[in-house]
Image (cartoon, rainbow, N blue to C red; front, top):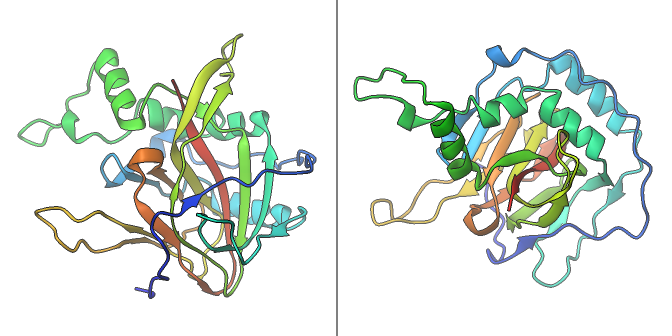
Length: 266
């Protein structure tokens, strides 16, 4: 595993305020996509880290990586503000509720998060799957996601990590917002509870590495490394329950990541 960069673990990843309002991109259509029936929300660490392999097709990822390279990316400063983690990458950020909704309900994500997430409690002692009732499923979903899932944060972020770039150890913050679900006529109080990362390319290095807290049973837990895979989505808990993590230095190629957050009702 690549050597971790030592950074004050109290640092937080904050969304930098934008002085200029960027133009909303004309995003390419989200197709082709694999049907939801062919995808699974797989727990890497139950209630903490989930993966969706092939969430976006390789051809769609290639289209998006090419398109995103045309956007006006800005390089983050090498010297962060107080209490912020060191981050060196190129990024683009825009508020786009329509695109967030496309990622949520126009893909398999909504179905996977609300009705088809893998739940160990749904298996009996013989290892047989026992489908929960709709009421049980909704209750369990609220427990896993920190509230009733409403959609994705309209704050869309694009990250490009070139050779030598990285994101040091940090925690992702939870943010409160007023959210308007697609089917609603009135906005409601909401908050973000999980980070969504969608990897569009592979590269050398660039792993997202998580550092579990020590427990009585495991005094020195091994770090958990997730290597970028084309089209893979990663969901990890943030806010008070966020696991310390970092984006390792890219040693070859480019790592393109599309970022949003899961929004739940407050």
